[in-house]
Image 1 (spheres, rainbow, N blue to C red):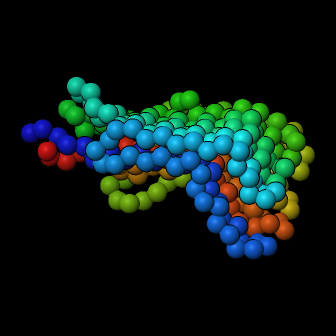
Image 2 (cartoon, rainbow, N blue to C red):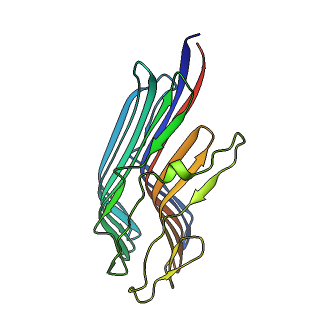
Length: 222
């Protein structure tokens, strides 16, 4: 029986929610999403700034879903350039890339975050090197239930005075907050990567996320 595939792909540039000193949503910048039928979607935003809290020079995203002879393919990418959060976290470029494949013959799913990277990421002035394992999703457990597993990437901040690595993988900076880098989430038919998630805990409270991509989908009889 011929299979139909319900595509899923989503990519976003920057979004957030400020709770102190005021309540304000930072609307999703440069979103792209696929319909179940696949295809292509792209978006771009130039020179965005939200007060002195978060700014970037450009954000672009793209999502693609296509079919080959033996597989269904899904790709989501998000790129943020000139990112600045409270003049404490900065990066020249942040790229999230997530590609997935579903085999028509076996129903096997595979995904890779190869190509996801940071360029000149600095926290409190310190250059932070982040090595992202492109095969990390292969070792993540999948469940038939709707259960999420989050795996924050390991970071070395031993030589960065004032920065502390917490047990959950976050980088803690006193009177700033927690910074999560390259988080992945996996379920039975879904996976995502969020390159930046900052939980602010100072005079400004709230959260900011940057460069998010998610993909895959589910097959059903045509």
